[in-house]
Amino acid sequence: MSRASEGRARVTASSLILLLTAVSLAATGQVLLKHGMRLAAESAQQAQGSLVLKAATSPWVLLGLTVFAVSAVSWLATLSRLPLSIAYPFNALGFLGILTASALILHERTNIWTWIGTVLVAGGLVLVVLTRPR
Image (cartoon, rainbow, N blue to C red; front, side, top):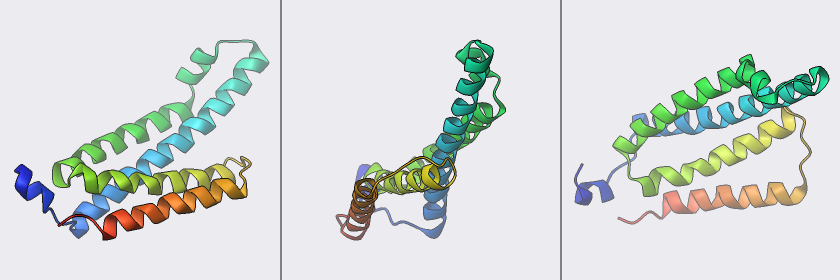
Protein backbone atom coordinates (compact mmCIF):
# COMPACT_ATOMS: atom_id res chain seq x y z
CA MET A 1 0.00 0.00 0.00
CA SER A 2 1.45 3.38 -0.92
CA ARG A 3 1.70 6.14 1.63
CA ALA A 4 -1.13 8.07 -0.04
CA SER A 5 -3.51 5.11 -0.18
CA GLU A 6 -2.59 4.01 3.36
CA GLY A 7 -3.82 7.34 4.73
CA ARG A 8 -7.23 6.66 3.16
CA ALA A 9 -7.47 3.00 4.24
CA ARG A 10 -10.94 1.83 5.19
CA VAL A 11 -11.50 -0.43 8.15
CA THR A 12 -13.18 -3.47 6.62
CA ALA A 13 -15.02 -6.07 8.68
CA SER A 14 -12.18 -8.57 8.23
CA SER A 15 -9.55 -5.98 9.23
CA LEU A 16 -11.56 -5.06 12.30
CA ILE A 17 -11.96 -8.71 13.31
CA LEU A 18 -8.23 -9.28 12.86
CA LEU A 19 -7.43 -6.16 14.89
CA LEU A 20 -9.80 -7.09 17.71
CA THR A 21 -8.39 -10.63 17.70
CA ALA A 22 -4.84 -9.29 18.06
CA VAL A 23 -5.84 -6.99 20.93
CA SER A 24 -7.89 -9.69 22.68
CA LEU A 25 -5.14 -12.27 22.39
CA ALA A 26 -2.55 -9.82 23.72
CA ALA A 27 -4.73 -9.07 26.75
CA THR A 28 -5.45 -12.76 27.31
CA GLY A 29 -1.74 -13.55 27.08
CA GLN A 30 -0.97 -10.91 29.71
CA VAL A 31 -3.57 -12.33 32.11
CA LEU A 32 -2.22 -15.86 31.60
CA LEU A 33 1.34 -14.64 32.19
CA LYS A 34 0.31 -12.87 35.40
CA HIS A 35 -1.52 -15.95 36.68
CA GLY A 36 1.42 -18.18 35.80
CA MET A 37 3.94 -15.88 37.46
CA ARG A 38 1.84 -15.66 40.61
CA LEU A 39 1.80 -19.47 40.83
CA ALA A 40 5.50 -19.72 39.96
CA ALA A 41 6.42 -17.18 42.65
CA GLU A 42 4.39 -19.05 45.27
CA SER A 43 5.93 -22.37 44.25
CA ALA A 44 9.47 -20.98 44.23
CA GLN A 45 8.97 -19.43 47.67
CA GLN A 46 7.54 -22.63 49.17
CA ALA A 47 10.29 -24.81 47.69
CA GLN A 48 12.96 -22.13 48.14
CA GLY A 49 13.76 -22.71 44.50
CA SER A 50 14.47 -20.62 41.46
CA LEU A 51 11.68 -18.36 40.24
CA VAL A 52 13.18 -18.43 36.74
CA LEU A 53 13.06 -22.23 36.65
CA LYS A 54 9.52 -22.34 38.04
CA ALA A 55 8.36 -19.74 35.49
CA ALA A 56 10.10 -21.48 32.58
CA THR A 57 8.34 -24.74 33.41
CA SER A 58 4.94 -23.28 34.30
CA PRO A 59 2.19 -24.40 31.91
CA TRP A 60 0.38 -21.09 32.51
CA VAL A 61 3.45 -19.03 31.61
CA LEU A 62 4.12 -21.16 28.53
CA LEU A 63 0.49 -20.87 27.45
CA GLY A 64 0.60 -17.11 28.05
CA LEU A 65 3.72 -16.78 25.92
CA THR A 66 2.13 -18.86 23.16
CA VAL A 67 -1.05 -16.78 23.15
CA PHE A 68 1.02 -13.60 23.21
CA ALA A 69 3.07 -14.88 20.23
CA VAL A 70 -0.12 -15.57 18.27
CA SER A 71 -1.28 -12.06 19.12
CA ALA A 72 1.98 -10.68 17.73
CA VAL A 73 1.41 -12.50 14.43
CA SER A 74 -2.16 -11.18 14.34
CA TRP A 75 -0.86 -7.69 15.04
CA LEU A 76 1.64 -7.93 12.18
CA ALA A 77 -1.15 -9.03 9.85
CA THR A 78 -3.25 -6.10 11.08
CA LEU A 79 -0.42 -3.65 10.38
CA SER A 80 -0.16 -4.98 6.84
CA ARG A 81 -3.81 -3.93 6.30
CA LEU A 82 -4.29 -0.77 8.36
CA PRO A 83 -2.30 2.35 9.16
CA LEU A 84 -0.75 2.36 12.61
CA SER A 85 -2.65 5.56 13.43
CA ILE A 86 -5.91 3.63 13.08
CA ALA A 87 -4.81 0.30 14.57
CA TYR A 88 -2.84 1.41 17.61
CA PRO A 89 -5.60 3.25 19.50
CA PHE A 90 -7.48 -0.05 19.70
CA ASN A 91 -4.91 -1.18 22.27
CA ALA A 92 -6.99 0.87 24.72
CA LEU A 93 -9.51 -1.96 24.54
CA GLY A 94 -6.79 -4.31 25.71
CA PHE A 95 -6.24 -2.10 28.73
CA LEU A 96 -9.95 -2.27 29.53
CA GLY A 97 -9.95 -6.06 29.10
CA ILE A 98 -6.88 -6.51 31.29
CA LEU A 99 -8.30 -4.31 34.04
CA THR A 100 -11.58 -6.23 33.98
CA ALA A 101 -9.85 -9.62 33.98
CA SER A 102 -7.45 -8.61 36.74
CA ALA A 103 -10.41 -7.73 38.95
CA LEU A 104 -12.76 -10.58 38.03
CA ILE A 105 -10.40 -13.46 37.28
CA LEU A 106 -7.22 -12.67 39.20
CA HIS A 107 -9.12 -11.01 42.08
CA GLU A 108 -6.79 -8.02 42.14
CA ARG A 109 -8.00 -4.90 43.90
CA THR A 110 -8.94 -1.90 41.82
CA ASN A 111 -10.31 1.50 42.70
CA ILE A 112 -12.77 3.94 41.22
CA TRP A 113 -10.02 6.18 39.81
CA THR A 114 -8.54 3.30 37.84
CA TRP A 115 -11.95 2.59 36.33
CA ILE A 116 -12.63 6.26 35.58
CA GLY A 117 -9.24 6.60 33.88
CA THR A 118 -9.84 3.44 31.88
CA VAL A 119 -13.25 4.64 30.73
CA LEU A 120 -11.66 7.95 29.68
CA VAL A 121 -9.00 6.10 27.69
CA ALA A 122 -11.68 3.95 26.02
CA GLY A 123 -13.65 7.13 25.29
CA GLY A 124 -10.52 8.54 23.67
CA LEU A 125 -10.45 5.47 21.43
CA VAL A 126 -13.97 6.24 20.27
CA LEU A 127 -12.97 9.84 19.51
CA VAL A 128 -9.89 8.75 17.55
CA VAL A 129 -11.83 6.21 15.50
CA LEU A 130 -14.74 8.52 14.75
CA THR A 131 -12.62 11.56 13.90
CA ARG A 132 -9.77 10.01 11.93
CA PRO A 133 -8.36 12.26 9.21
CA ARG A 134 -9.76 11.81 5.71
